[in-house]
Image 1 (cartoon, rainbow, N blue to C red):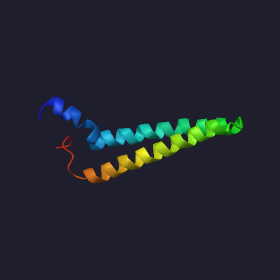
Image 2 (image 1 turned 180 degrees about the vertical axis):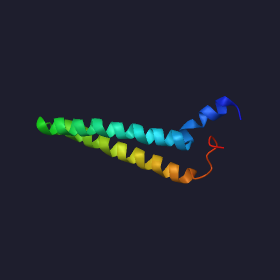
Image 3 (image 1 turned 45 degrees about the horizontal axis):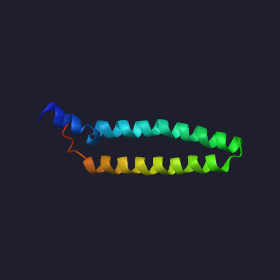
Amino acid sequence: MSKIEKAKGWKHSKPGLWLSIGTSAFGALTIAKDVRKAREENDTLKLVNALVGAAALITGTALLVRELKRLGDDDVLLG
């Protein structure tokens, strides 16, 4: 397998999926900050925007976790 093929498979490997989940965790911090700010300002539109972003983040993380479970022991990068 060439290095290019391995690089293309990175995001579907266990380390790639874990990295994506970790990145999502940082996104959660930003969303929490946005929700807090929207509540302080009593801005309903900003609050809805933050909640929709939170829903997208939760859905994306759930998809990553599902892919991680499906991957199981078939990780090509780990040998």
